[in-house]
Length: 177
Image 1 (cartoon, rainbow, N blue to C red):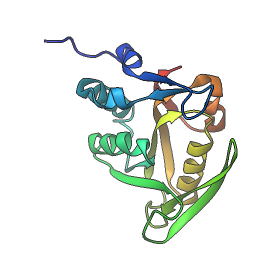
Image 2: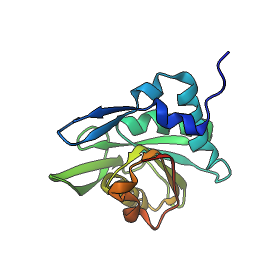
Image 3: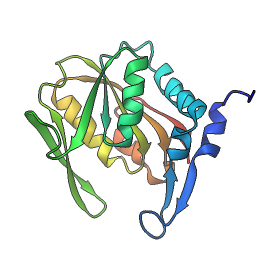
């Protein structure tokens, strides 16, 4: 029987893909972690355990890889799950926010009735890079009157300094590059 996976083992399970999606980028491919049931379980448990005493009402996550972790963490925390999607993907009335990307802008949406004023929210995504996407998500959540208890990531790319856009929030990441 294999020994249990430890937090330090997770980094070695993630595969690097050079020059994806464009030259000069080293993409952190989490599919190798997701298919490893022990590594996936360890990741979800670590992220959830950090917030288990926080009485989270909802886990809010961004498509698409954020959904993978967000839904599992919501289950572990006995919380609801709220998806934030790209423009035009949600079927009911939405609140939108546009934000800057490296080359252009993008828009994210949340159902306008997704969160109650004063509810306790954990925002989850797979990776923190420049922080623009998750900052936009947090602004959407705050715009509904919710309280963000923290933001959690599987991976943080420290050299991109995304943390600097989230200084007002407790941030937790498992794997740091």
